[in-house]
Length: 65
Ligand code: FES
Image 1 (tube, rainbow, N blue to C red):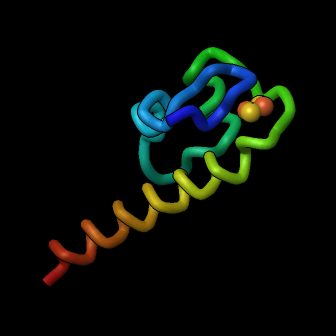
Image 2 (cartoon, rainbow, N blue to C red):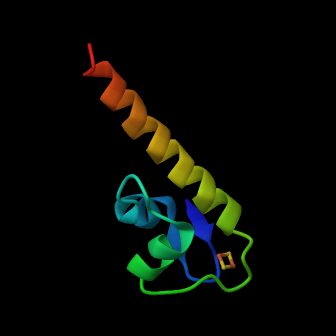
């Protein structure tokens, strides 16, 4: 599914560039070789980062016991 129409970025393109903790929205765009244009996709990318971060945190907790 297209997330960023301005840069023709799909959710797969973006997820493959989200590299865990500490990644920022601008880092994801930079990794895709572009920058946000209109900015409408930024909240969605931010949510994807948050989900990835929470997923990594849960995975870490599972191994903590
Ligand atoms: S939709 Fe991503 S910058 Fe416009």
